[in-house]
Length: 159
Ligand SMILES: CC(C)(COP(=O)(O)OP(=O)(O)OC[C@H]1O[C@@H](n2cnc3c(N)ncnc32)[C@H](O)[C@@H]1OP(=O)(O)O)[C@@H](O)C(=O)NCCC(=O)NCCS
Image (cartoon, rainbow, N blue to C red):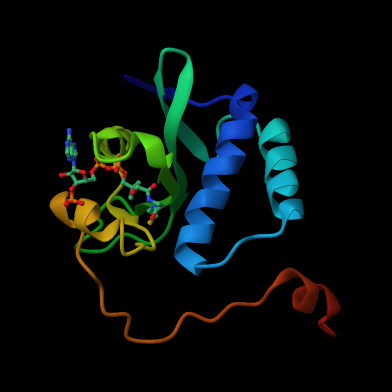
């Protein structure tokens, strides 16, 4: 097995693996249009941002992981102010429990370290939590709720 950077040519697997991850997290089946939308997204993606890695063996993709990088304000625990968010860690069911997820996570954390990231965050599924904990991730008590404004509401705001 080897871990490599994904390219837009991997669009079909990247889209399927994202859907697998979302279906696992939400506990419900996503409509087929979502898979098509993701497939289109990865065909048109620049291959750089977000950074996606895949695990591959004998020409078959086994799993993937992604990271998006940004800069926020530096602080005592994050002196560089560089932040990474991890997404889409998923391994096809038939290849699980043989270290593929661990290898993907190690590789993306290596990328974070090379970019001097001072804070890595993610949303963990029940299945992913033990793996993340084994790398030292811990749950952070958020002292105030995250608030979001989505596209449609932003577009319709009377500014
Ligand atoms: C979470 C997920 C990515 C883990 O992938 P994986 O390839 O199975 O992960 P690993 O094989 O590295 O580790 C998983 C377990 O297998 C064990 N394992 C690793 N190599 C093994 C081997 N050769 N033989 C037996 N077990 C092994 C690990 O110790 C670990 O055990 P634990 O869960 O009891 O701690 C995968 O289960 C998945 O895709 N789940 C659905 C989507 C999801 O929840 N993604 C996370 C989103 S936050």
